[in-house]
Length: 356
Image 1 (tube, rainbow, N blue to C red):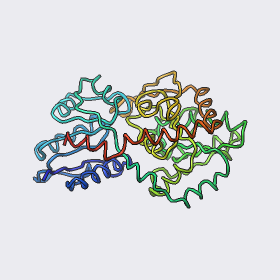
Image 2: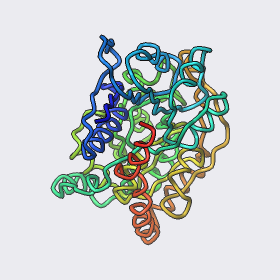
Image 3: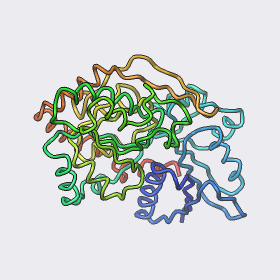
Image 4: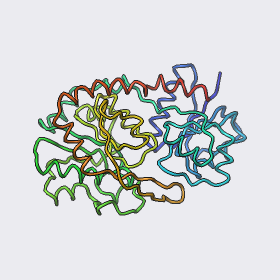
């Protein structure tokens, strides 16, 4: 029997979710995978094929050297949210491994650095599971939001997630109407968020709720302040209780939450840049927003984020277009579920198998 060992950061939600579904797929196909974290030290046991689910940065790529004598094959299944900063040793390790990426964007970035990419396999989700939802939990959220149109964004607070631009664009809508609410499943205070890297957020917007309070639309913003800590059933109910999913990220490697929102039948608004526009087809399952300036920000010598700054007028306009057009939302909802099927884990990870 083929031996596969999944190697990933157990504390990183997105990598953990991907690894769990890969394990589920492998189990259904008669392979019981092992699972190790970054603290694991090889001790002479052959690990078979090591599948490293990771960000493709020089420090994580260097883990290859730890396992090179203890595995039959090493496969990177990795993401990038910008330009990588690789060393000679990074290129050496990647050149002697199989490299799989989840989006055309990551493929383009790696090939731009001279790295061979062996395949593109999107991250998978269990589409059927995303549609098994507790109606009582959905009813709780809908009652909480009353009869207002609900716009949702789900992510940890980070320098590249664009919450500040979303708040600025939503402010224009909130100040002229009472039938909307913006729900943010994230951390409120940037000073307590681990993915800000001590950088000042745009507009000096450290606290999202404080900004809303000072500008008179606090009652139209609901922040959970609990990103990553809700159980799966509650998170699913939150997705199903919204009308529109607004993915405000300025830079991504895949955008797993877009796939999740589509699986729940939610039209998605996102910036018209890769990889977001690999998921969202303008006018079909969502709307795409223009961006203008591109800010390149180096992050602790591992990557340079390429932040696409949205046109706030266009972002506000696209949100209001979907708020007001019930028929368009219904049409996009049907299309969203259809387009989400290409991310079903039974389909995506069957493609991954050929590389293991």
